[in-house]
Length: 183
Image (tube, rainbow, N blue to C red; front, side):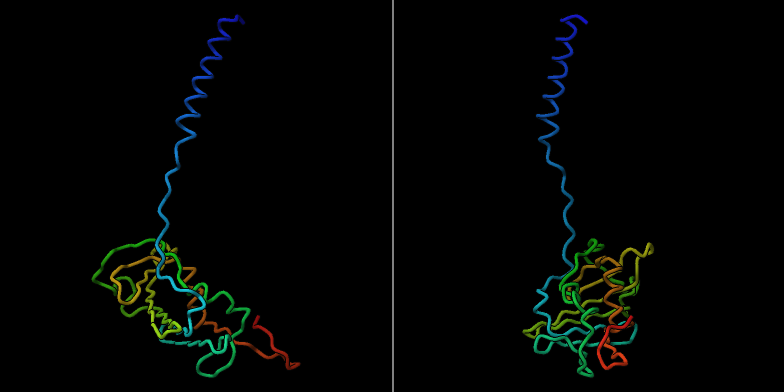
């Protein structure tokens, strides 16, 4: 191979490499905007949780740092409850489906399948309505009471919350008298 061809190839490689370095590697990737928080509170600020699913309700209260069933005063199974206040503190919405909507029944929000009522330490209430799942079952329709937006939340989040009613975090005693979590 001649010196002339080698020099031309070297110049071409330098030009292409320079172009890639200057224009392509310096280009910032386009960031997708993060989905908005459905609502946002501090987990330690939650003092009372009420979940109503298809007409059945479970209510939990925090007393002296421990979570209890409100009706019986029994403690919750911490293996099942741990992390629940973090989940309830504010999930990200999958997206805002509509800034305003007029027919909540169309999305299973009138009446809602699930109603989550949180009471914060100062007494401030937050009510969340969860409707039916989307046709692909990936998300659920949702709305914060007092706000006009129709949001989508991950259906796995709403499923975990509704399990508080369908499978309450009850502590079951073992035959030896010790306490264990349900299997």
